Structure formats: C-alpha cells, structure tokens
Length: 340
Image (cartoon, rainbow, N blue to C red; front, top):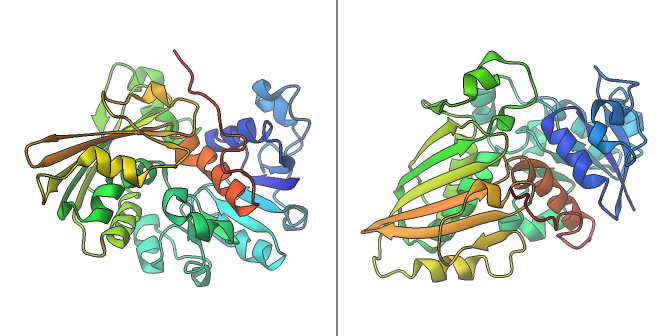
C-alpha cells in the first residue's frame, strides 16, 4: 500500500486527486494539508467525499509529510521548491503538479514566473511526467514534474509529426481552448459565470506561461529549433481542453493516420480516432487524450482533447505514481467519461 500525502488539497486539482485516490486500491491517503482549512474534516469542505474519506486538513509539516511514501504538491507555483529538497533527503518521492520543476533552465523559470528558483540543483534530476515519452525514467524517478494541461494536449497532438520529421518545425500553430477550472478555485471577477457565460475570448496572447514548457518539449523531440505560435482561449465550460494544431507537411504523401496509430499503439490513455472529430465531453472525467488528424493540402490539422483536471493534472499525476511504484499504469484511472 502506497502511503500518500497531498500538499494543497483545497483547489480543483487537489479535489480531483482526492476523488481519484480514494478509489485507488493500492493508495492510502495519510496527510492532506491546508493552512487555511487546518483542522476541518475534508468531507465537510468536499461533501462528495462523505463516507469515503475520514481525514482532516493539517498544517504543512515536513516531519508529518516525511511519513509518506509519496507526496503530491497541488500548490501554487513556487511552493513545492521550498519543501521538496528536505522531503527527498528523507526518502520521500514527489510529484509536483505545479510548474516548479518543468523547465530545465532556471533563468527561463525566473523570466516566466517572476521569482528565482529555490533549488535549481534539482532541475536536471526532475523527470518530466509525460508517460507517453518518459515512461522508463518515471519508473525510477524520485521527483516528477507533472506536465501542464495545455502542454499535455499540445505535446501529444504534435508529437508524432515532430518526432518523425514529417513537418516543418519552424511553422507550428496551437489554437487551444480551456474551461474555467483551468484558472483554479478562486474568486475572480473574470471567472464569474456572468462574465464567462455566453462569451469566448483569447488571453495571454503575447505569451502564456506554458509556452516555454511546450517549446522545451517540441525542441527535444524535433532535435532542432522550433517556432510555435500558441494562443489560449477561455470558453464557457467547466472542464476540458481542445487544442487545434496546424503544421506544414514536408512530404505530402505521408500516411498521417498510420503515423499516429503507430506512435500511440499500446498507449492506454491516448485514443487516435480513425474518423470524426473529438469533443471535450468525450473525455470529461477521464484520463484519456483523444486525437484526430486531417489535412488541407500541405497543412496538417490535429485536434487533441483532454480533461484539464484529469489527464491535464491529477489523473496524469496518478498515472505517474502507478509507474513509480510498479503498479498497473491504469490502476484507479479506468473510468469512462461522463455523458451527457
């Protein structure tokens, strides 16, 4: 049994970790921290967990967390890097769902996140937690950087094209849309239903924080410089990311469907559709990434959809946990999407 701790259990990602972990047959929730809610039973804050979890929030204490086999950080950017070195020193394995260990260059981190990195010596060791590309390294990792939600959808969508050299890596476009839960569980005027409902807008057009993470991935797979235009959008739904991706073919005779089916053959959580187009409701509540590929002349059009809170966050983190502890990769994650 894996003894699990969660630092920051009150946000949407923390709540999703709880929902999935209470049903995991090989995990036992031991510690859930929240400074604001310390002492409150978790099931009072999250009534959907009544009868499934008899645990209260506690202050984030290193000695208590050190009794765990694994600690998830579902915290704001910049929090995990202050605690992770001590946990690793005490033999605890860590999965960070924020961005603290995703970027390998500490200067790049400081540029995009506005603070110096607290433990740059760990950046080289941290394994990027995208199982479809780093499965072997994740199995032996002490520290896993769980990918961002946009980078998960966009990377999986572009990966077969970039890896194979089928497209021009200097002409890539990612037009991505997210539900409001991607902004976190907070009171903010721009996220009120009266502000978001019946509306649709782009944001962070001059540069989103996930851009350097996506570029880091694509450059690694391409083995060359990559030029990507990435524009995120906010849509009036709660869950889901849809990424429509564009690239230019080098070889117009490329069998695109075959390329994707071969690359993702045997992947438990990537579904390549032979026809039709994926929609976000087909993955809502599940850990799947559903992909379709088409073309218009020399332009390849890829559509990738995920649930931003599951494959884009908590579900992928549990997929990584399963790999780290030798469990079946799909344990606790083989849930069908919710419909309607």
